Length: 498
Ligand SMILES: Nc1ncnc2c1ncn2[C@@H]1O[C@H](COP(=O)(O)OP(=O)(O)O)[C@@H](O)[C@H]1O
Ligand SMILES: [Mg+2]
Image 1 (spheres, rainbow, N blue to C red):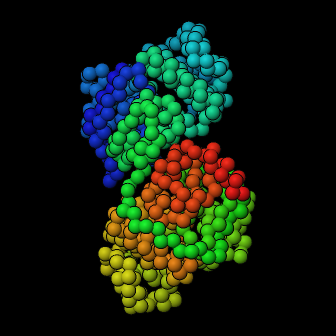
Image 2 (cartoon, rainbow, N blue to C red):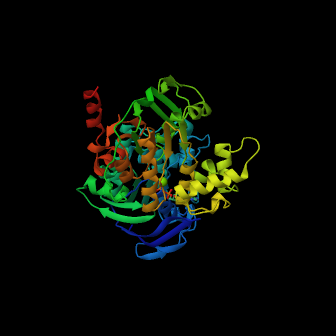
Image 3 (cartoon, rainbow, N blue to C red):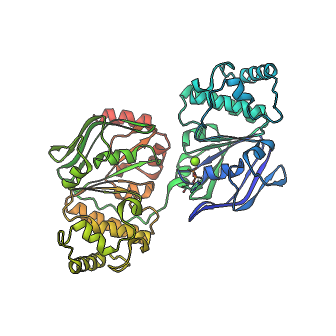
């Protein structure tokens, strides 16, 4: 089946998830959809499989325009989707799950279905026992079952959204072999991923998404470099590195392991020295936030030691970290950093404790005016924080930081900000480094990571690289690592450097 998408648009509130996507997918091919988290891939797939309706735009299947109202509607038209998050499975036998939802199957012929199931499973070399229970299956096996079911339903288009997350390497190889076979048989496959390696290995063509737009496409032989540029690069005006010569250790992690929901980080060691900036790079959800929380005392390591200067602070609270000169600026400025409903002056009262228990309004007003000038904030002391733009909220957060800080932890410090605000924020952070603070920050923007970090830790699928000097990295190399390429070389490099 050929699928054509014309100018598909979908917004959620102020987020443009799909900002006019046009794409032609030929039959008997494996179309890759590549893009970092939040690029709009899943949204487009949900539109194509009837889970959500687009705000506007057309879907044309084999030459005729269709409106896909629901998932059942999509199945009727031959479009089947394997989800990113495995759905909850009722306690059913495999065969019953297989039969479930088949149109017209009010009284399914179990024997006939069992025979067809076995034939299909054998065709793809899937080792599934139709009488076993679904909740005993691994993620990879559930995927196999789901593929068989969609084929049995007569799917001519198969959509897979991040299917290689949570399955083993042999299962992945089997999945890829199956998909190739299906494409050879004439099926249209749409394979959504943020993993460069998988896409390069499997797809006959690739479309790259970024911030809701289709920003480029490629065919084999793929050039990893150009795919990475399309995925990540904002091309910041490079202002040159102005690193401060690093001083003594401010923060050190030794063999730290962390466990978060569905994520384990093993044995991370690094040191942030006075004046140094450490960037944490990776796809969102690869562990950077958990590690940053551990640096703030907000997440407790299951093993390993955390030190601030000479002091072992393993297991101490966020409050104890703060008292030792640590500040943590989360990504959600209005939810966690600033208090909606309070004015700028109120924020200075809260953070500085101006006037002790007897609040000195006059002094708070003066302090606010002073900082608003210093930090170039477009707003008055009496304005409420939520009336500020994103860039001004971020400036406000920086203005609220205490004078004497040794460690500043930031999540996406310039996300959504214009270039001017970005440069300004970093000039202020650099001042802090010059005064002897260390900075650890997370960013999804590779140009920002490369431009402002001295060293970079890369996160991929539960792995954390040793600290890599930013000077030796390029957007291509860093983007490759984030997408899972180049780790073999890295491991040996880490061994070589002890
Ligand atoms: N149901 C929803 N409600 C609000 N925002 C959404 C919803 N679904 C997606 N988004 C937003 O739309 C953008 C694109 O998301 P998504 O299509 O899931 O991206 P991807 O699959 O490429 O990671 C993101 O900013 C996401 O937060
Ligand atoms: Mg997605």
